[in-house]
Image (cartoon, rainbow over all chains, first blue to last red; front, side, top):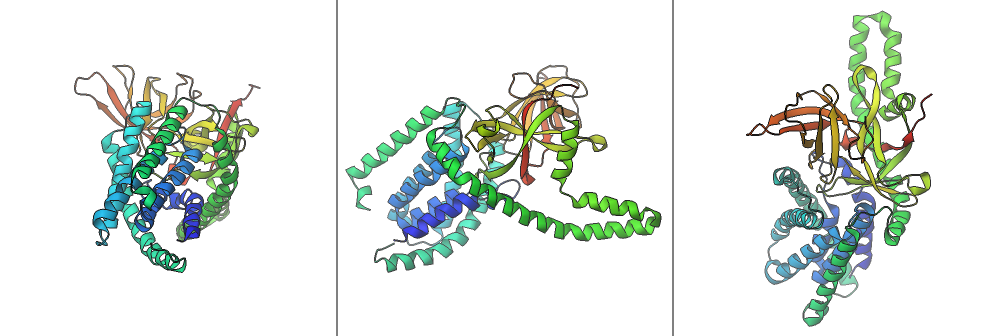
Length: 167
Length: 283
């Protein structure tokens, strides 16, 4: 099932997602590669892989940057849980749906972080200000997701076939 | 996949929620230093991230230089035409602009600043537009501690280089530190307007701007005013340069003057920063 692909993707995200991608920002916003990976592997490998990866990728981001550990992990985990379930039941046939999921997941991630920060710290952010970053990030994540998903889908199927397991 | 289709699956989901919820609760209170897992992750990944961040930044700088070469040439031609006698001056000028702005400002700042500071490289930046946080490659072993102000040298009026506020150290490991930038929504800065010395509060807004309000009702703040830290509240030292007032608005009942401040620091091009360690003794 291409575990090597998953591990390599996590490492690439950790080393390049937090540096190179930040330097090609648009209006100060860069694509959220962690979120893209979580969505991608949830769609490719199912909810179990997605949820596991969500916790690992989220915790790594939290341990590296956040004061509150678990905030990203919780948001990513919820996203993987929801899209994993819904996708398996309803959407697998339609190839356009994953794109919509990437954009909607970005919106959902923002919403979750806003709620969690408000509940934990009492911190409020203007929805108007957040919507500016959100609009850019939804579009940016959508584009990067399309490229990465298209590339990884073929590779993932190939490696899944090689290991004799279904994707 | 079976593990996720039944009671066992629900139990796992519940356990994950409980563990993550507990971690969030346990770490929500202010912490001086990082936990063991944070120390391990920081220790392993920080050096690699620093190297990659610097390498990527060099590539970007090289690209910028290539783009700027055409501008420099055009400028030289114009100056030559205008006054050939100024050729030598132009060459000097080219040398100066050829140098990194950071190094130039560092040299000036080290001379003029009343603070002792340590230079550090940014090793990684948070990915989401919901946070404005980054890590640097210096930590408690270099004398950093929570609450230390992070600055860069920024050019002020008349070529003077001053301390432009970037953010504050929120947590330290031995060889790394987490920094919250001033444009992160969690940052609150007590500021003074240089011209009037009126005080106010500004906070990050997820935009490359700070938003806030003045404390006094009859403040004379206006667009273009320069804003520095006031030192009130003790989070930031006083006199660090925050930005320029871009917009002033009175609320409908004329009680509160709301301001928007454009930071001096260009957050899109940060690579190296300084951490203020202490105030220099007056000679």
